[in-house]
Image (cartoon, rainbow, N blue to C red; front, top):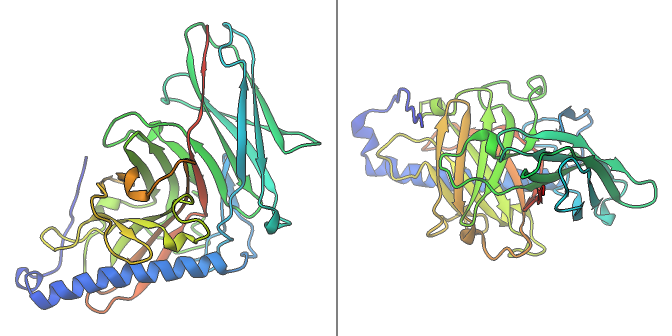
Amino acid sequence: MDQRQGSVSISRDRSRSPQYLRGARQALHALVLAICCAMLLAASGGADDRPPGQVGPIRAAAKTPWGSYMLPAAPVIERVTVEPREPAAGQPVVVTARVSHQPFLEPAQVASVTLRATADGGATWQEHPMTPSAATDDFQANLGGWASGTEALLSVSAVSSLGSAAVQIAPAPAQWPPAPERLTVVMRDPDDLDLMVGDESDLLECRAGWDDEHLIVGMRAAGDFGAYVLSPVQTNFAMAAILNPDAAAGKGITDGKLLAYLPVPEGLPIPRFDLYDGEGFKPVPESGAEGGVDGEWLWMRCRREALGPNPSGRLLTFFVTGAISDMTDPDIIPKDAANYVMLYLGGQSVTVR
């Protein structure tokens, strides 16, 4: 994995200064606090009056730097049924998803539901719009035509009229770093440069996956994550806020965990990748947080155990990029954010007889 450092315009002596190191630590804590406050403001703010952009099955909110995002409320995927689970070769398969919206958010509605299917272990995916029922909250799609012995994976995603989404994500292969195509797309937004800060921090796509031990997130930006280095002007950063509803019932996204990438130079006592507690703004012990960059892709993962007990398999996420202007006197510069996504750690499988 390419872990490019770029040029660093700090003298060696200054980087060893205790005063500077204290300032760096304080700046990181201020950074986390400021991001939490910005997200809290976003969660309580009203809707943007500009139309959301839409590409593929996942719609992102209209972009203004963090200030006018929708409420952190995604559609609810109540259940998904597959009939039959073990079809004969060539036999059609009917997938039915019951998807609703929180009643207290009227007139919010489920805007669209999409079924994604792969028959080659996640190397390629096909997307199928699901047709709504006129009388119920059910959405349906028909699949079929697979050869005998095929093992297919299915996942459902739903988009709200508010712009947030709910996405089932299939297990990721036990591979690190992950292959992008093996993770599930949870948000796409490639055409918003006219609506926000148009630079290398523009988020284009967010992905997620999981295995028995880890939650994995991927972020693709317009620029090169590997070029995010400290300079006298600013340090870019990227972060995924993660709220476990099972461990933080009734709380907001800022009370969850923050999986962060802060590309400071080697040698400083600040980890490039870490998981922070949103309530105390302190590193979560034994989180197993790690990551890497490969050009426009940033990968991060942490231990699922560090997010607390999660029997429902649901995690609310919010992806952001930004910059800190000065490590000794920090000023937060918002760059971009993807709308809220409720991840459902699971999916459906079909085995063709």
